[in-house]
Image (tube, rainbow, N blue to C red; front, side, top):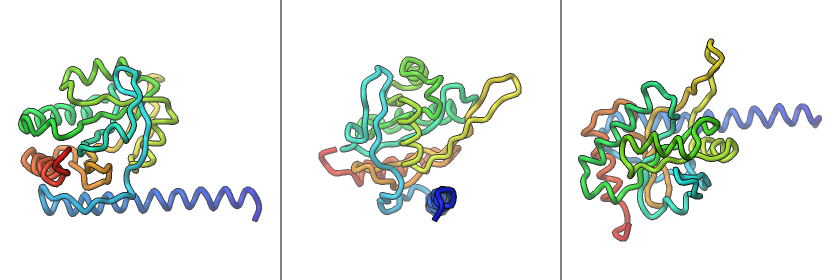
Length: 208
């Protein structure tokens, strides 16, 4: 097999793998919409090890986040509407959960690390709730997590020479072992989102 042909086959295999992952996610999302508040059985095909840094520039990996269920949202600080809206929703969920909110991790992962330095992420997220962990890193580190979580993220040039980022808008729900168990869709009703978060808490090991 020629080198060019091998590269072509490899590229098609990668596209097929992403399509399967996206299909699984869409299916789970559809099921979730029909059963508001329901979680799926833990699914290890989405998620995995990662290494990023928090707003203080300290290393944070999947190991630091394990032991508690986690709600991850992906976005960027220049986002005009989806990210501030979702962070505001997350702030509301934390307030409503009260003390139970401490049984979960909440994290905002940048898909735009070139502009979202740890300091920028820290200042941005602190405007919502300091219990939301800001996570960023090098382009390579962020791309690795995006790939592991089957997140869609694409840089889109703007006419003024700048750029914006298209990205997945759902919040990814991971159990205490960092296995995918569902999503909260963008704009999902508050009561449905809270039921999913409460089930994450109820299903977590007693020690978490």
